[in-house]
Length: 133
Image 1 (cartoon, rainbow, N blue to C red):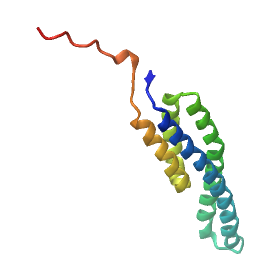
Image 2 (cartoon, rainbow, N blue to C red; image 1 turned 30 degrees about the horizontal axis):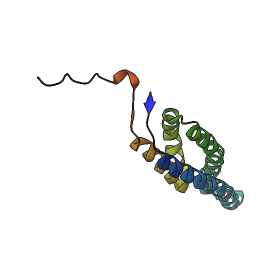
Image 3 (cartoon, rainbow, N blue to C red; image 1 turned 45 degrees about the vertical axis):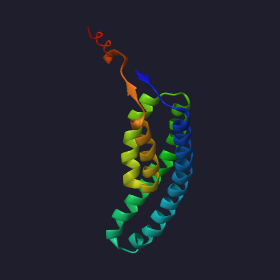
Image 4 (tube, rainbow, N blue to C red; image 1 turned 60 degrees about the vertical axis):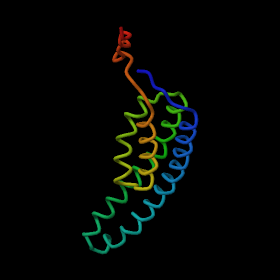
């Protein structure tokens, strides 16, 4: 697979990933705090809050995992492994849009920027048409 990408787009994506990494850490810590805060009513017998507690625990785990995963994405981007990054990023966009909306938006911006970049499979290139006579 041949992938063409310009430098400024790569710099833009690196900036977005770096900001997204910081936001993922902050959202992960905030999700832990919110999960602990929402667990108090469960202790006192309000079972309905279990759903909220479970959501915030999962959100904390997803955001903290995204914090570590974004470092891998940055390494993929620096290694110019755009095809693999494009494939792996889609799953993380979906997860972080569900459990950490802000981080998901940052990853979605990078995914869209990667999708805009022109790429083509080397085996699908056709020879140029013959010249007109």
